[in-house]
Length: 256
Length: 256
Image (tube, rainbow over all chains, first blue to last red; front, top):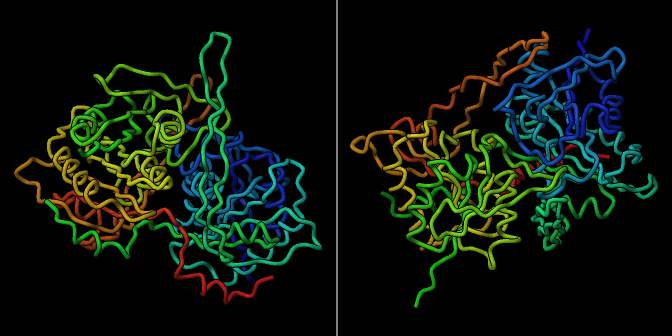
């Protein structure tokens, strides 16, 4: 008898977000789930961990019959705690999302959703981050759920190479316009910040982060091109940040 | 007449930490500094940005005659705000640190210090993160300051390749034992988490993140090996996370 794989599910939008509900719905067909997710929205926390205070974990009954927990910490805390204290053995898969909003291109670096998958990958587990390029709570998840299903089947079948995770972004398009899945590289697109000033009742200035996405990397092999052209984008990301190809270049510097 | 370069200085330990004071002392000899750093310790915040509330920026007089600001946000917020609202033109250098504690190996991913340098690099600026492998406030910065001086001179002379930053870790050793600087790769060492349980007065359980550094990657070309053997380690890091070498591998998967 084949044992169903154990799957850890998390996100950065919080335990009650529609995105994680959809992810649970699809992944539940493939394995025994454990859900551990932030108790509040945590977008943009990147790979933050909680070091200067303790985290609080509570069992929740959000998802019928599924071991589910909310956590006062970050998505990375969720993965760490889930693996260390909740799951009895290493799961076969860590899935994170479905994020409400794009994590394509440089957004991967700021995203708590992607960071959770990076953390799973660090632990030697096949890990995938899923995002839909629509920020709305009531976004239509139909296509995304199909993509999740397909990717999970493939990854359960093949596993991922060591040190590699998948960052999956799905365009917000009608089913008839969806063109399929592309393997891509991360577009080299960055944010141009613009801070919006606000003055409080005491005359103190405060600044809200805002900005535009600069759009210089127009080639057709990027995740950004894919989602703008109705394809879902899968970027294989690596956790080793070393620029190995430049080690010998830097060795030529005259050192101490 | 050569114009002195503009240098943005930040860290994750906060505007008043001894580490940033040492960094200011050394870099001040090479350029016109602007200091913008968190108003409180921010270790372990990774690439977090502040999205759900505004940030507050205040001028401070910590550093005589140097434009200095404290920021309620993260190290990445500091770099973003500094570049968008404080500096009149793009600086030639972003330096972050000197961090109190190692950011070698996988610590680079959790570190606010390294994230600030990554953010500078995203903006197309030569960026360097400096750390000393000693957590104490009163750590001896003598060797680290020499390393900072040397690395800054080299980088001002050569600039860094596009998309590449330097992660510099300096061992906590006596001057006579220091062996020099090595160009390294990131060691493949991860944390094994152990959460320490605490029960509050109402009987609620809370958990403090703790753990041990697993130590399987023993080869002599890593940053961890370097700092354990009295060398300062420089790892060139890349901001493009794509596993380019695996794009064709994944294209063989049968997709939608």
